[in-house]
Image (cartoon, rainbow, N blue to C red; front, side, top):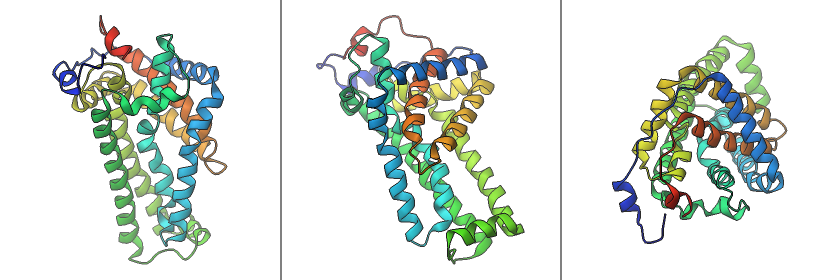
Length: 274
């Protein structure tokens, strides 16, 4: 959008995109398209996304030395909740590649100057609140089962979790609660961030659009969620550094999933080339 346009004006013309019906083949197609975007300049994306595993490794190290060993698994699993926000720059790269614009890495960082930045921040805060609630719920479950103490060592905690009835209750209930949080994120933000970058739209409208996409395409979106979870688990192996590849591929694929699930506006040239 031209510089003379402010965010207030964007908010007044907020759009509610028409949602399309897709199939499971579209989900796989979006993943393939995301892989193609990644291979265009993989070194740039790996460099940018190394921040993600490094921060994750630092946080896990901090938790493991801060008498909160029981939160290591929730911390790892919870990264999936904030992943859509972490991939913001990748959506922008895919958007620019689609428009035949420059796709150098500096544009991935320039999203902070997007006219939609306030709305993006609101949705990002929403995800962070969910992440913190997930950690709180995990700690509350552990406290309910084991009391106020903490595990003396991580191997002991793992052995207890896998060899006792109380441990299995922790594993099963913890994963069920985590699944609930993951479904909320999937239903409310599956296309929210790409939509905010692509056209004038407020945070509430972006979340509602994601919900409509989920309700219109429950099976394909659930398949997408399973694919994301599996790839994030694979990427978390070897001290999270696999995420330097998984995150950019999923980020680009999310953009293409958005493209396949919504109708493009007739005229959006000013917004796209802002």
